[in-house]
Length: 633
Image (tube, rainbow, N blue to C red; front, side, top):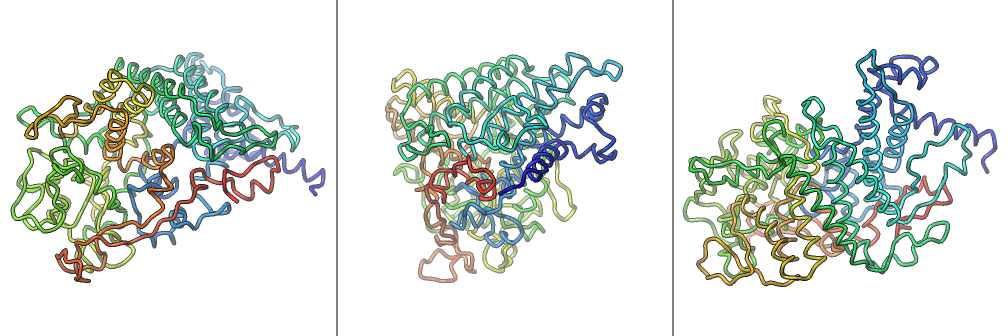
């Protein structure tokens, strides 16, 4: 039992930690005993530093997003070298089923975001104009709305990770708060989502859509607020949290149901309206898909798709809706670049992602008319019309390339490095065979025969330690088009709605350089369209296939699998790739030295409790009002 004096000590240090840890950058400048909140908010530099620190929790969508946060690792798009777990890749054991309520996680949202939320509310309560230091009343009011957005955003990330959480918005615990006041139980999921819905919409009315001052790039905007809201409401309408019977009876300390197990179709309408509102605001402020063009004026799908992830907003990338200006793309690139080019060379993509990409004609590989050939090797070079750096003399795949990789759509080549892919970095073709140029046989090698190429800057050079800047894109317009299409198709099983949804999918496919879909009948030799059955089920499948490809390697796939309630099927199985130990350019299934044969490299485990991160056991031990996430023990 905790003694009374220890309770007061605990409260003091909790509150001190919540305040001081959020502003350590400038608290280090003076002894704590000499610096007060009043002093902080009387000084322009300290005030701006406090605000910058509130922003600091926005996840980095490059690296360490994969290692520390984990949304890429947990999905079925990207796969790190399993032996990297010894260097702090804590979620590698998790994907293998080695996960419990005490498993460490560097993202640590449970501890991190409440501190930042508190810092945001302290700013709102204490910041005031400093006209003599060029901080106007208008600027301060905008900063306060930015803090409202950030607090709501961090609450969203918490509820998206843990499900129902302790939730008390706009509240700062007084210094004399009792331990009981600090320890609260979880609030129902829908209650939190409803509040965040209203809050994001309200702050969107108060924030500018864009800033004319380029130095404010990355600061909160109305578009950012509506982007987070739209993605959140799509998740909230999806099967995991909309009528999921698995969570019936999961209650909080007050015996309230934490999830609504009754399906509410109107949640899809909320998602439709939120995404449409976002699209209209974004379009009104100049947002559009990013395009680059060939010399003849046609769209270059290779450079468009590649540079959409690399080009800054100020340089013409108006597809960006929400980006983190400061990011660690250098480390991401280093992990993806082959060891033969002096990269770490162990961060790959899965065989299932390779299989998901369409053929050049826009059909999936399992379609009888796709022309897909898996076995054997190309008998000639294959060219595409493009200025992309990933080809030599116009050739995308050379004679001798494994047929699996030939005649695929442009997004495949931009996203995947496979054995015999061309590397601009040192003007050569990659070789992932065992103990060859790009497979040194260690943990720093492509464990399943592939490396990630998407988001890697083509000019990055580990030898020269040169890594060009790229924006850390968290939300982009292409995703919103697909979000809107999905929500619309789910909400209205009507032909008019399906046609509108299909038009947004086609916007993505046109940029990707593959044929558009149509519900109308087309001939087998039609070079412009592919017929899709005019049903909700068929369109749902088309939308999901498009999401898998278009949004790959962006940290979105895992949430898609979760919200569709498919993670326990797609992630609980054997994962395949090429033969890591293969030394020969052979696809002979009976030849143990053949590299080009599907080989199990990893057995993943995904149980029904994994849909939500667990509450750390230490937190459960401290707060008896908490309920563990569903099915965790």
